[in-house]
Image (tube, rainbow, N blue to C red; front, side, top):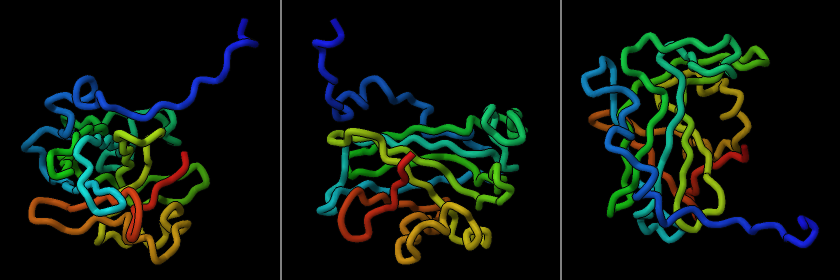
Length: 189
């Protein structure tokens, strides 16, 4: 019977992101009041510069010591020592295409090849019209380890700034441009 069935075509994400996937504490990677916590705020725009009002951003990151509570961490899983740290956040965009995540800066982390990755957040962007999630990273502007990060080094020098957040009064700003001039770098994973 399977010989007669074709391949199901890919479907675009949404339009149900705001119904089934968001929750009230989603933006909080750490609880409010956590020492050293900051906000990462940004705006998602399309190729014309218009806000993407129905997108969702997910973040995944190491703790401040550069450790994941996950079996794929090369040192083995270890629970974070920072109380309330989840390592994961999820935020919807608002009517202006803006999102916000409340988190702490992660620490540098080793790769299986023995190199050190600069502190960064991994981001997935979901939105109507996208067949697959878009994956990118947020690096921090004052981090000397950016110069030797094994992933950032693979990005064309003229485009690396699309992966580096800017300082903001309560943390950092990281805008995401889905297409066009100054498009954010996305990774195939």
